[in-house]
Amino acid sequence: MKQSLNDTLVLCDLDTLMLGPDGNLTQVVRDVLNLFLSRGGRMTVFSQRTPQAVRTMLGSVRLSAPALVCGGSLVYSFSAGCGKALAGFDVLGEDFLHKLPAAPGVGIALQMRDGSTRVLRMSQALERHLRREWTPYLLGQPEGINSADVLRVLLYKDAKNVPVLQVFEKALAESASPLLTEYLTADCLALMPKNVSAEKALEEVCAAAEVTPEQVAVVAGSQAMLGLMHLAGESAAAYDAPAEVRVAAKRVMLCACSEGAAAEYLYRFVREAENGSM
Image: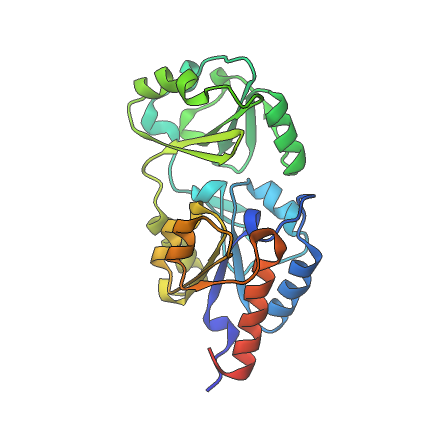
């Protein structure tokens, strides 16, 4: 018996699986995504980027559920134009931002609850990322920012030999609450409160889409989605995804992250639904 495509919500890794070198959706992904949506498929995305950057990249694509942006710390509904923050730096105290040191060659950007980006200190690496990722930003100082409005602190280093963690370890050690630290790229380190959870993020998306976690298919290319993969009913990974991601996946695709893995999954999904083999 055939099952409708809209029985499942696909949660796809936007940054790793859908974008080309120019920061836009690749043509093959755009074509297959339009086919998937025209057949009644339901889709949303996970991204390290802000809502404004994600909206620019998606263009006219309309998501079927809120997206998980800013590394899953913000559940954002593009149809409503607002989001729900899952954590904030208020747990670290008002003076945390003031303790961040000024290190040569290290830029500091803040991802905010309202979806915006604030830059406290510019660097070449930070400027390069902002331009490539189509991210609008505002320059600011810690004095004008409420820590409760901060989702993540992103540190961008210009040189490979800059020991970012060591430079900032005093500020991290003096914070009142433990932080998660994750290298998003070789030159970008993200700091976020440990109380951000994949369970809460998926719960919010499922509630908005009126589905259960068993009806969610997580399609991943990066380790950031590992927690979501364990919670979802279905999961898939690109064949060159990190080993932990491939092990957690119920299906490993033939395509690499940058070579159409997202398109492969969505097209296969359409074919299986049409053939009644889901």
